[in-house]
Structure formats: structure tokens, C-alpha cells
Length: 84
Image (cartoon, rainbow, N blue to C red; front, side, top):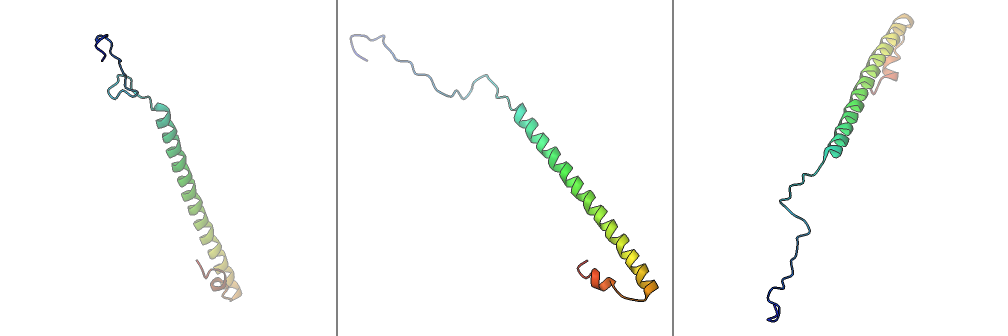
């Protein structure tokens, strides 16, 4: 401080106030996150449903082939369903 002006003081303010009263609003971000979670849950449920339907169709097809084998007297099941 110069001796000529002892009352002259430059006041500096912080750019970011840590203990401010204003609360950050994160409701939109939370809603987006909830929506994304719901979508993931729906997709996983649909995948499980598709998996269940595929397994029932596979078992029905295997039963039909076995009936045909029984009538025809052949063994085609081992040829078609080796990887099952």
C-alpha cells in the first residue's frame, strides 16, 4: 500500500464459492439415468423372452423329428442337433 493512499485496498473475489447457498439441480441428469436403466432392463427382459421362445421351439422341433424318426426308422437327430 502506498503511504499516500492507505485506505486503497483491492478486493478480490473467488471465482468458485465452495459454501454457496445455491444447490445444483441434477434432476434432469437423474431422469436420463433412470430412463436409460429402464431401457436396459426392458432390453434384457426381451432377450430373456426370445431365449425362452427359441428353446421351446427347438424342443418342439426335436420332438417332431423324433416322431418322424420313429415312423421312418432313421436317425437324423444326431445329424441336425450335434451342437445343441
